[in-house]
Amino acid sequence: MPAASAARTRGRPRSPEADTAILAATRALLAERGWVDLTIAEVASRAGVAKTTLYRRWPGKADLVVDAMAELFSHLEVVDRGSMVQDALATVGQYVELLQLPETQAALLALASEADRDPSLRAKVRGQVIDPQRRLVYEAWERACARGEVDGETDVDLVFDMICGTLVHRILIKGEPVDEGYLTRFVTVLLAGLAQLRISGGV
Image (cartoon, rainbow, N blue to C red; front, side, top):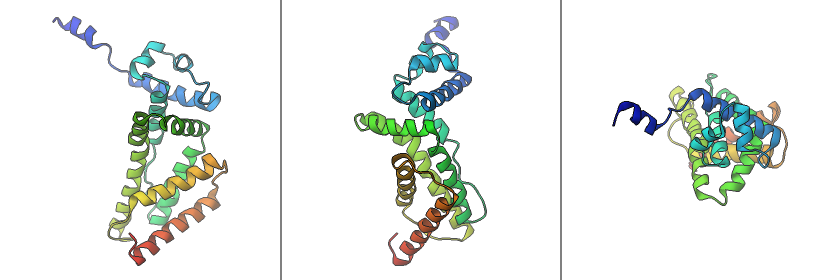
């Protein structure tokens, strides 16, 4: 097959700039319209691309929103402030900021509902949004071990569930903010609980 014909068969390569614009438009419209009124057509218009561009890359709205949220949460990182307590305050604080964004709240509540009926969507949410966050807890624990602040292993999954469960419940379910005082109390209780569990041999 001639090279030109082969190129046409493969189609155009994906444009990182277009992807960035599409995902940003998705998040902006989620904040403005909410899940129900979010449409592929309006995302395409806001991003300045054709609807066919979106449909070639994302088979439906849920897949698009998963990628939009995954890109947003990909900016989370373990902040190095020199101690386990300060690292936790800064890192969990980043997570709180994301959860308090209107687009994050609209997306996560809707995806939780949709994923309840769609196992494949649940797997995408877990693989692209949740598991990368979980790895941050592993990284934070390893850093604390390297500093000599803690040693051995701990139940990282439990720690992750405690962080996410508490903050998602407070922000998304109860609709209450997490201010500096609440964040400090939460991190203090979390780390004190970890210490107690290790003393008692619980983890």
